[in-house]
Length: 370
Ligand code: GDD
Ligand code: MG
Image (cartoon, rainbow, N blue to C red; front, side, top):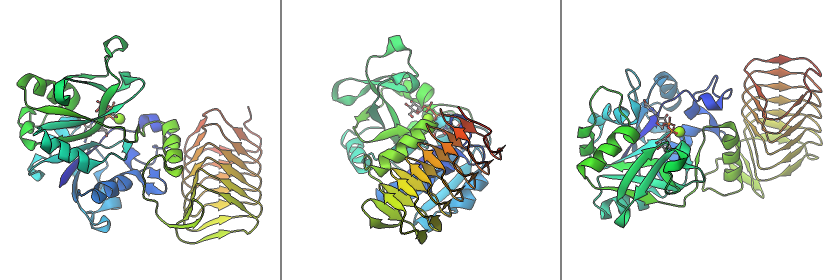
């Protein structure tokens, strides 16, 4: 079974985490998001994937190669210029040869792909769109269905007054490649504003597949943190790497944990981590590889990428730190704060209220407090 993953966009809303790292490469529980997604596909019977990328193909090739490390076949294809969601699939049509999954590359879900495929076949559908309920459909593609779940209307980014249902396009499709004949070659063309409305006109069978599977778009800093918490508390099915060493504590490789440190899951600890005397690490949290957590540091509800050094007595709560930051003694970071990469924040600072610190920031002692 083959799939196309749409990987475009600049990840603007996730800045500063995406300043140095393309959005699909940002880590999800210590693993690049796209890699976790590929493994999820592989484990559900998809063994050949085309990554349709808008830019930075070399970064994806360097990280994923031809997919053999993940035991799957991977093609990484860069568009000459952004082709839009359907245009991107048209651009790789020569690699497709039958019923194909198409995924938006920025969605975290544990949707049952086999059940969706069985449904697509049973309905003899040409396009099947996975649907999920949301509170506010205005940021999404609204999908109305008639009898038998046949799609009767598709409205991208509806105005509040046009909302007739809470079901939206969840960004997983199954298509029969013959529908790509409606997509003009070498042009910018969208599924959402082009192909789906056209198929409603032609009358080809297009069905919705509603599901209550876990679903979220990872595109914003708070959702990035929420997804981690949901994974760690088991709200979404997820394959943790590493060994479970205590109740809901997973360790990837070796770590040096002081016997007096207090460790409370759910927690994932990367390889090469060192945790000092009297430190308290409370889940749901992820400690990236090669982080050094000093004595008496207190951590709760955080996501740390690799190589962070947290000095004695610092307090981190409900925040994200990118790569290789140095956090001074007794500095407090909390309340949705995002620290990017390679920052050096001196001691006794207080960073709160969703503050975003750009890569390479240097802060003296007691420079910021609220
Ligand atoms: N290769 C490629 N080329 N990929 C693209 C392009 C392009 O020109 N444009 C967008 N993409 C990718 C994005 O990277 C993302 O993975 C996916 O296509 C959807 O684009 P977004 O820009 O994230 O769209 P959205 O979130 O506003 O809306 C879409 O997703 C919603 C669900 O999250 C739509 O499909 C909505 O209908 C849907 O509800
Ligand atoms: Mg999106």
